[in-house]
Length: 354
Image (cartoon, rainbow, N blue to C red; front, side):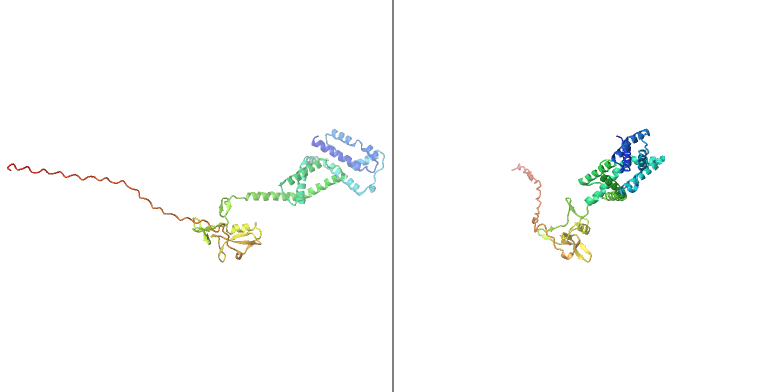
C-alpha cells in the first residue's frame, strides 16, 4: 500500500470514529445501522474524486444521520465534559480542513505537510531520545556514544514512526500519550535545536584547535623526564648539580608551566617537584635533583619541600682511564759498507850496479 493511500485510509478512519463519538448516546445497534458502511462510502467517494476527499464536520454529519433516521438531536448538556471537548476538537479539525482545501494554495500546503510528515516523525523521535538521555542517563550527546544510547535512539525512532503511521496506539491511553509526547516534542524542539547547534560548533572548534607541536619539557623514549639524578666518579649521589645544554641554556626537565598544568589533574597529597629557591621570585629549575613537596588544595608550600630520593644510593664507580704510550715504529737498519783497501805502490827496481 502506498503512502498516500495509507494516509487517505487513516483520514477516513479518523472521520468515521469522530462521527461515532457524536452518536455514542444511541444504542450500539443504532450506531451500527447508521455508520455500518461509512468507511466504504467515503472510500468510494474518494475514488470518484481521484483521492481529493472533502469531509464535513463530524458533528454535522452525525446530526444528518440522526435526522435521516428520524432520531432526536443530541443535547450537549447531557454529554460529559470530555466528550464535549472531543466534539469541539473534531469540529475545529473539520473546519481547518475545509478552509485549507478551499484554495489552491491551501491544498498545496496541506499536500506538502502530508508529504513531509515522515520527516517530522523522525525529528520527533530524535527529540524524544535527547530528552530521555537527560532524564534517564543524566547526560546528553548529539550522537550516541554507547550501546544504551543507540538502543534508546532506535526505540524512539521506531515508536515515533509507528505512531505516525497510526500503529502501536490501540487504546485510548496510548493515543493520549501519543498526543502528549507530540506536544512535548514540539515545545522542546527549539531548545534542543539550539543546544545541538551549539554542540556542533563546540565540537568543530575543539577539533580545529588541535595542534601537533613538539611536546614541552624533557622527554626520553616517549616519557616525560621529571627529575634528574647525578653521580660522581665514585658512584655517590651529587646534589645541586647545574645542567645546561649545548647553547648554554638551562636544561629544564619540568618547569613551572608543566607543574601548574599537572596540579589540575592531581589529588591532594600527590608529590610534585619544586625548584631551588634562589631568592625572591627567582626559582632555578635546572639545579638537580629537584626537591619534592606534597600538593595541598591545589597549592604547594615550599617549606614542606624535601630532597628527592635518588633511584640508587650509589652506583658503580667510573673505572680509571688507562693512558697508553704509543710504541715507536722501527725503521729499516742501514747496511755498513767495507772500506776500500789501499793499492800498494810498486817498489823501486834494484840498482843494476849492485
